[in-house]
Image 1 (cartoon, each protein chain N blue to C red):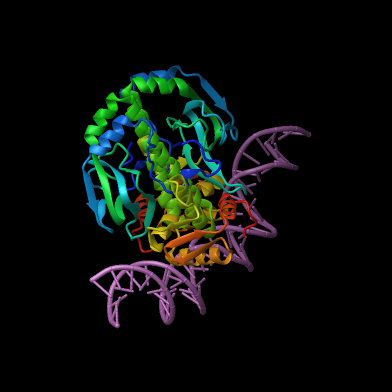
Image 2 (cartoon, each protein chain N blue to C red):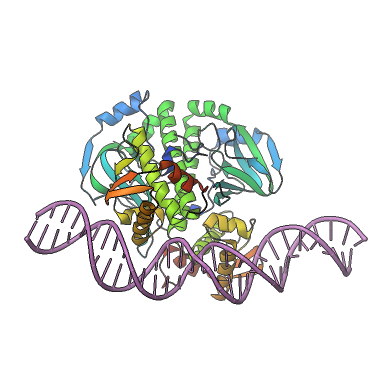
Length: 237
Length: 237
DNA sequence: CGGAACATTGACCCATGTCAAGTGTCGTGG
DNA sequence: CCACGACACTTGACATGGGTCAATGTTCCG
């Protein structure tokens, strides 16, 4: 984890939520293991903006989109939470975002109140939560750099690379993965329309950087060129 | 503070850094009061991306811009730190951003190492740091919503409203303030060019929403309409 | 007073948004 | 197993917000 790293647009580039490594999380990991499991269906809301922030969740399987909305319906997805990621860090009474499953999902649920008490008496736990929060901040800032400065091509390339790195870290093939979210979700995450996302995938295909055997199945062909695109080196391609 | 609030684009909307209210900060406040003061000139770097994260700073006077850069020179300002704001929260060895003064600035400097030790033994201090970090996260996400979804007019309106609210909280006139940063800084913060920022100020003037007696002196004429603009209600104006 | 940095304005262009057809893809029921 | 319907995705034609380039004003400081 890290709020302070990057340079080289590290791992957490996009996939926002912060996960806690499998170190000596004794207390916390155990606490989570005992926490009740909740299942929600695709498209179901875990919580909405304004709801009481009663629990800290950890995704076990599935995927969740976290987003804010404007009054006229525009939506900004702040991040996707995948297995291992925590949702609901923070200290406020109410959630500031909506959390919606993008596929059937199971989560562990820890009551926020008890966690707060535990953290007050356990510096190691407190540090863990602090690190997780710092990880989210770093992710938000990476995305900010993306939506503020990068072109559509760069945004989509960066998004795919982030998924690739996540796969890599899990010991899976970094060149091949499924997209659990729709083009609309990707657009709302990157600040693009669905049409632009689609056209950009096509352009990346034509550039020989990837293949799309199915529209949700990605095969990266040239990770190095994708990386230089994202970092802003590369003659505008 | 709050990672979880908003709805109504609360206070921290833009001016990112998190400040610690003047509550019973006994320990922390005292610690800061004793911390050595450092002065830096306008345009001087406080630290750069990759530098060792040796200190936590608190701005006493002046203003600092925090930003990341892409290889080709594009710059995204992540936030501005004003008096009372903390800089350098996080747990990493190295800074992930650059911090540059935009006017002559004085800061208190707390060694990160000692702070880390103190936080481990003082839950109240740890909580305070956690809250400050959560505040930064909320600010980053607000800005993300802005750069991802809002038009130039909405971005500039939101930026000015955030400054207005900051003034208001300080007991100053919310309708009247100085901009410490240049148009370039505003552009790099909002994901716009300097020309667009300038044209947008002109448009807001023509709409009767503000006046600009000098280019750095803002006078808000209709805060309510500015607010509905930012929230995405208002017939596209 | 003069010059440098910053800001505004105009003309033009292009990346991305919008609107409108198509074309998969997948789950369901016949 | 196939056919249908519902979505999701792609593609095209066109519109436009904001970027780019260039000239002109302003502000501020020495």
